[in-house]
Image (cartoon, rainbow, N blue to C red):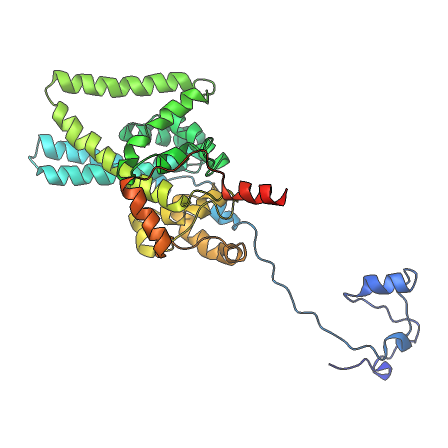
Amino acid sequence: MTSLDPNFFDIPAKSLIIIDPLVDKYKKQNDNNFEVTLQDVTNTEVVVAPKVNKLPKIPPKELLAPPGDFNPTLLLFLGCVGALVLSNFGYWLWQWPDWVCFIINTIALHCAGTVIHDACHQSAHRNRIINAMLGHGSALMLGFVFPVFTRVHLQHHAHVNHPKDDPDHYVSTGGPLWLIAFRFLSHEVFFFQRRLWRKYELLEWFISRSIVVAIFYIAIQNHCLMYVLNFWVVPAGIVGLILGFFFDYLPHRPFTERDRWKNARVYPSRILNILILGQNYHLVHHLWTCVPWYKYQSTYYVMKPLLDEKGCYQTSGLLKKKDLLEFIYDIFIGIRPHHQTTKNEKESQTRE
């Protein structure tokens, strides 16, 4: 560090204006007068403050904007429809092996789960009509009802890990993990218990359920009920197990955190990013719900410094002995008390 040399400045002694990070201190010491003599600062050491790079608090706009046109979510939906049509033609007309049709249907329904999820957050398409069509179409594939899924899922976001108000808390902790798909049926009960419907959503529920009933009725009348059960219901159950594990259970365990930076986790993997369509970056979705699924990974790496600063969980949380034992317990038993006090509530009670 060096000192200011008055001979270096070819200016009158009374005309130096100090513009410095310490200017507020000078204002207080000199009655808010910026004009001070060189003599006042001749022996002052010049300290250059390091430039502080502020961490971004939200992702860049290009990662947040709702997609339009033929975006990946719309193409994914069209791919699901095409795959199911192809599978049905293959089974009934071209005598494809059963296992081929079964795998195609399972993959199609797995992809449909991502479409309905983005649609319920209005991030499937910027056109609201197209977004709703994607939501209702993918819901029908899965045997869901789009407004039920939407309202219940938004309650999950509003009350993550709350034992009573988070509908997914029961799904993840209400019994053995291998039965998690069946517990998704509780969403419909939650929807009616909490009276979550708006405007014409009860009518939408009635129409959606009528279509499902009609499918089973037609199948029974045409003696193809076993096809519906084996190639629709069973694949839907498998997809429910996969989504329940990667979408509900794993991201939110141990189901006690309610802080927005810690109530979900990420477990980075480029392979999983493809296989489960980005759901391994679940915390990214909870923090910024308008980010579409195909931008989760990019958003994660852009925002990782902030996630590091906040102490966010960035592993699967299954490698420690205690966590692994809890996971094994959850596979076979999984029942946890729903009156338990969450971690954040315990901390607030301790402070009081």
